Length: 402
Ligand SMILES: Cc1ncc(COP(=O)(O)O)c(C=O)c1O
Image 1 (cartoon, rainbow, N blue to C red):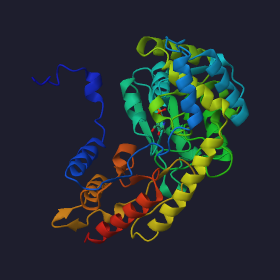
Image 2: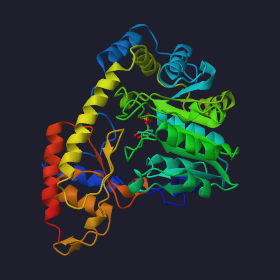
Image 3: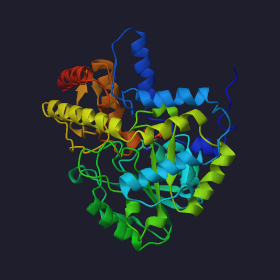
Image 4: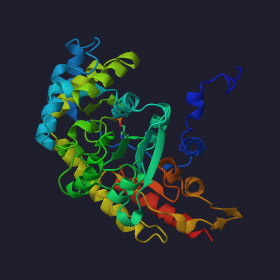
């Protein structure tokens, strides 16, 4: 087949970074095909099955004939259930008109960015950040402005940092809490301090990604939209992928000021229309069933976090925070930079993660993808046995570096 020369493709797609994880994934597949037992700690998804009552609701939806296009922002009953969830869990008052259901939270974020960002607008992204934030901003021709949280501060950006980063060109601030990849969680006081900064800049909108809300080991989840003085400027993103173990179903949503919700609906109407009818019925059942199953999974993640942290204490040179949410640990591994094996020098987190893949047969994601090139992301959404074995192998491989 003839290659499509890069000048044929749009500037838009050429400006998008290729995923940093592609090299890892390819190498991992090659090694697995050669018969190696690869332990994959690179996945950003729960290892649990979707709870049975949710699956049953999807089967019923098919049998009951829910096979037609849905309203673009989602079935009214689902949007009402999401509004009820915001009241129940977050004490936030929204109606169905404030809610837009999308094909995963990723589309919710893309809708919001496309609707708010003009070419040249600056978007402050709290860093380390989820891989897609920067690229979505670039697609909207905005300028991503990463703001680096320090490991010593639990990777959290401070209000002072934010104040110094905001310019007259800043249009949006975006972050996730609980955070992928650091597991950090802003508590209410920390969010309030950030909200107070944002209060002074009325041109700035906030995309608050709360998709890991139910995987929170600390206190109560805090929402930026909980502060009335900025609520109208907050787009809260959430979804079913993480809390309900529904990554493949593709259901996410926003809650926002009605005008922003209408804009997101318009954007979505021209790109994908409403998300899958059957997945929406399943998501509705998930909400009606409460969050008990989500909390059970959270307890399992907490146990695994403690297991991994304990073992990591014995791995020289790994510096970590204590994550209080999500299912990731993001150690600073820069201690190993400059070390070598058989004449091959480890110069970066990418080099180290490739080495750990080939030598320890453990797949991880290097921090470059998250704006933190000194770190590596471990997902602990897998069984205790695999975690123990993966860390044993990693320790052994690291010990060979000189
Ligand atoms: C922080 C964060 N936001 C959004 C998403 C996207 O979730 P969804 O599967 O609903 O598109 C992810 C998925 O990894 C994520 O980690």
